[in-house]
Image (cartoon, rainbow, N blue to C red; front, side, top):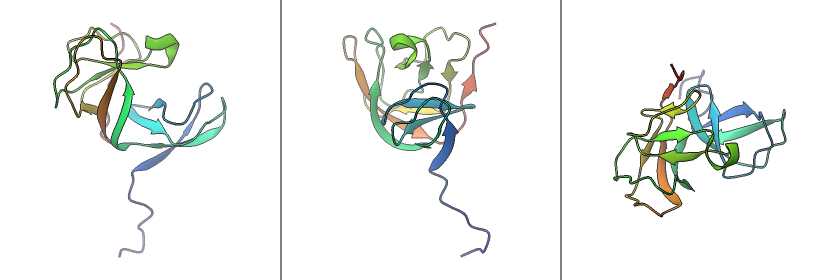
Length: 127
């Protein structure tokens, strides 16, 4: 193995902008991840940026398996929820390849299996 290898790159440190609970989706620049532990506001934690997790979904969204998703950061009182890729993104939302639906989910469903790709998405400017 190369002497400069550090880690596989599936986990990234982040500083919590607000109290964060284990399993909560977090935004790190243009990446999306899932907090591995509870993290107090201002403290450092770690987020898994690859893998499949069950996470909150906008109830009205109709999502197809394999669809790229929009992470609506203002949904659910600022905790955030995933929406379909046709949703109109607001400033700060993450769109694109950062997360993909791992299953289909219709209207009325409030959670969804999502594959976090470890690939940066696009941070919407709201312009």
